[in-house]
Image 1 (cartoon, one colour):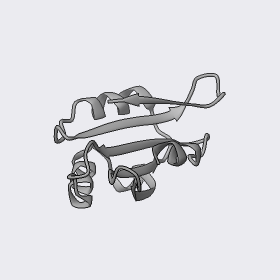
Image 2 (cartoon, rainbow, N blue to C red):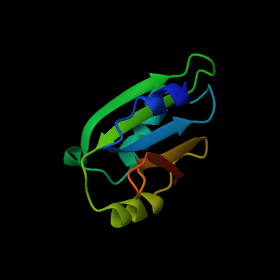
Image 3 (spheres, rainbow, N blue to C red):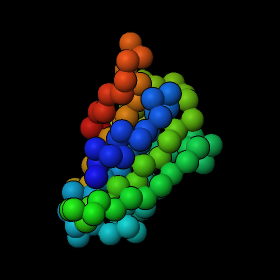
Length: 104
């Protein structure tokens, strides 16, 4: 589940998560949406595709190499992806006491 995936994320890292909102969103559609984001190969240290067993939804979770946060999020916000998908930016909170997830 998303909660299990979220609990396994490294608190020292930031992540981009692309999620299909319905079982009908395929693995290929998730990958295509991810590749439309303004990311370079050296922005990503690891990417994994998951499928929630209960809902059948696909999620692509990409761990990011640290970089300037505000400009990077603004670039992501300017992108449009398929309406049946959502993009989340997941990063350490300013106080360092956990993670905050932000839907873009």
